[in-house]
Image 1 (cartoon, helix red, strand yellow):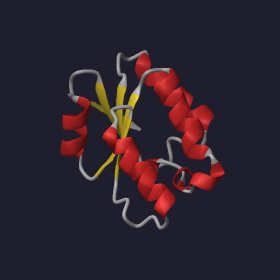
Image 2: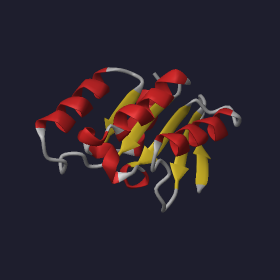
Image 3: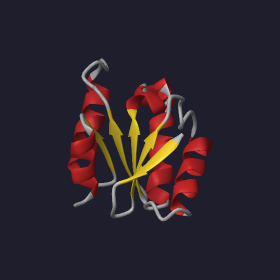
Image 4: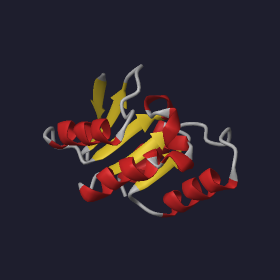
Length: 116
């Protein structure tokens, strides 16, 4: 895992493995970055457990609750149109209206959003 700083407490995580397979690991990631003065986190879709994108599992809710509890902002970069179902599309749409968690297509958009 490599961490790239983008200023303003923004950390871009570069890794080949899944970094947030469950809420416990998500919390560990938040804490590890918090102690390095990062409260804004960018990860790639491939670094998030596939179950996250199946809202019926509850994984997304549990992981995002950790980010909310610790006031950490998260941007997941990826191509989200491939996920079928109105629920996930609505979830992404509503998340993108806020500031806590966003689903964006590029690193540039992620850094811009987290710099606001």
